[in-house]
Image (cartoon, rainbow, N blue to C red; front, side, top):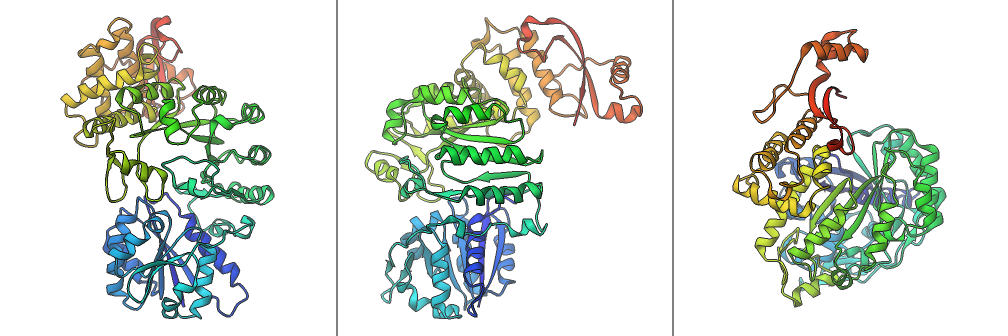
Length: 569
């Protein structure tokens, strides 16, 4: 019997840990059994044509094909399943993962070629299915009712559930998900490797499926550190812990950090999802010694409206949250989240939440939009209280009693300018100056209004366009928010500095005044030891002149001519 576990990822750089856990657990479970099946993995992306993925799947000639599903690939998998049956009519088709699991009745009712859906943790269910198949995939279908953890169709074609399955008590029983790393069959610089050191979440956030499983189980510290060493030994660039809340057990989570810091290879970045409010003083003290390039934190603020936070079952102690976040050193990349569309949050309230987060100066602010997921507390609340949302994945909110569809559309444009002018870091010097004089929310709202008149949001835009837009907005149109505080000559210098910092330019746009002296350029190259090969020296640098010290923390206090040599990586 040949089994194919399929993942359709959001992009090439992503890896799917779920299908790997199923395969590796089953391989270990049946290691000494004459019933051991042939299990293979196939990873594709939603950007590939369906026909191309179909040919890839068919080439395995599998008897049993099972998909890992999420909101980002559900629509794609739904289109793909009926096509598989056309070219492999004798195979059985199944799915697991949060999207199909919590929508099992819907998907089994609408996709006649789908034979079963795995609900919840899949490793034990998968092994039970293999055992009950007796080595033949077709034998499995009449026995689905006897296997816990499955949705299936009965003899009358009605969807039934076989009951919940017990969880794996010892996570150390699950093998390391990436054996291909150990054999060098990997892409360490262009893949994100997701890693799990715990399962479950003790919190009850109303919008989140993770809140369904309250009991948290941990992989042992010894085992976790051993697997971290595998990532370090093989030079993996980015490892993302998928633990729903990493910092639950102080001795354990600090122990993992201590191991990473003591054995770091100078390359691997580790990503953690943190509840910042619950970071201990010992943790904050330890983090002061973490150098840049080792860790990045994702922290969900979601809202600064206490009534909103109470309604979605999150802590309302935003003062403590802010204090803890400010205590995290800037050597750790900080990614803070807000969610638009939550209860009691209109545009005015969301603006206060936006400024609350921006006052913490995160490296990135992710403005997300509430997704009404089946199986969550929020689904029932939204249904009863007037929310409108997309009925198919990704279930994003269209309107609430507090935000109209037009308000949501406005926030979509706020998301675009936040990403362009803050998250990417391209406008770091300009925004650092501007936000000392005005509210980031007020500034971006004005910029969106101006951008809409210029049709800025009608299509994807290149980086150069955003420079042109903000130059026109601040300097030519004289942004009223900054009229009293802003030195237009300085802001122009900062924009030019950000522009040349962003990369070597082949030419300069109309808004940019390039002040250049080849003689001075050569002189600075010589002073910096870059004239040994003048052709290379000129090609990897740029020369520019400014009226302020544009690299200073407060450039308005550092007026005076500057000649700067910019060297590119």
